[in-house]
Image (cartoon, rainbow, N blue to C red):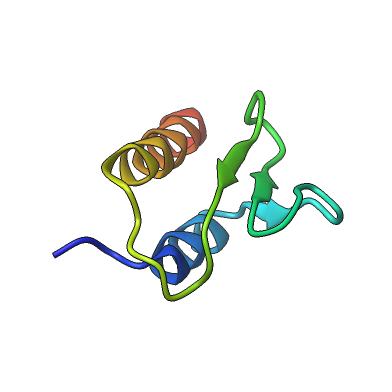
Length: 70
């Protein structure tokens, strides 16, 4: 069963990412963190099922910042 967009956002925030104000149109949201190059963009409403590529993108971003902090 796919995870929900709200769960991916919760994971990003727990890893220290913050939403960029005005960082997307419609249901798009951008998240960034100091020390992370680029941004993670999530589309969809909180209750929508996350697409496999979105889950992968979030997992890779979190792994990247955790590797830097070690």
